[in-house]
Image 1 (cartoon, rainbow, N blue to C red):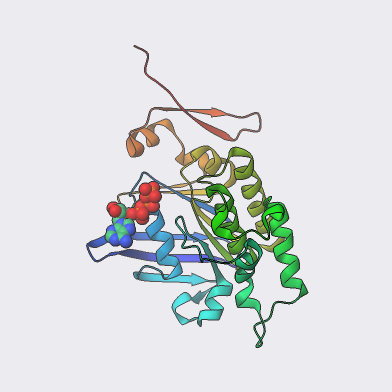
Image 2: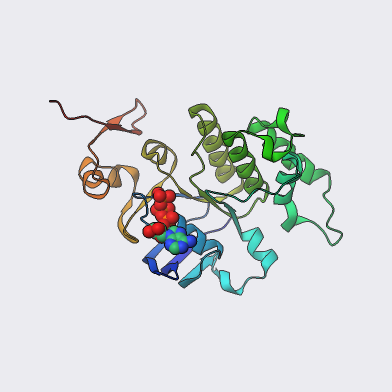
Length: 259
Ligand SMILES: Nc1ncnc2c1ncn2[C@@H]1O[C@H](COP(=O)(O)OP(=O)(O)OP(=O)(O)O)[C@@H](O)[C@H]1O
């Protein structure tokens, strides 16, 4: 169980600050989707949480400041799947996903049967079993993306940060992944933060949405509160209708003006 608290976070690059004033809490087992137009700072926010990008402000996992954790403690607290990962050469899919178990290995650094079982189950769920012995770099884009996500899930961190996890995945594999993440949060209490461009999926899976625009929080709330035609027109310059599935979940449908 791992609650995430972000206080007045600001982050950026040499050219300047690109995200600022972000304060939010994600309860244990909660799911927050960070949405917003291109360049609004979504990836930068996730990179700041992982420490890849320097930040000001405070980040707490279960009340403990991230900055006070050792590297190993941090790897158990936070798992991260980047949008554009660097893939190592020469590793099979299985060996790559096993790297996710590193924070849990003993002093000898050897994987045990439980590590192999965790990885095997993830490969199965993400439809990677038949690719398990293939070199990672010979996989298609969507297959590599699933392997990267499997590695992050294998880490079994309390907080899971996924940057655009469904990009490059067909609709079936995207749903299988999001269903699996949802199961992890219900079964293990994993706290989830994802960036997502697909607003329909964001509204169907996340409990709360945080909309960034030009690096600042423009809206935050339930999908019904944030995914309104007026907000999407204002923040994305988009023409959309918000439809409803039979279960009430939103479907964001682009509309085209009639001539
Ligand atoms: N390594 C970098 N160095 C300098 N500026 C960067 C770097 N990475 C991102 N930026 C800039 O920071 C801003 C926010 O980028 P970021 O990738 O966080 O946006 P995003 O919301 O994730 O966008 P997208 O939806 O296109 O993935 C953009 O203006 C981008 O050009």
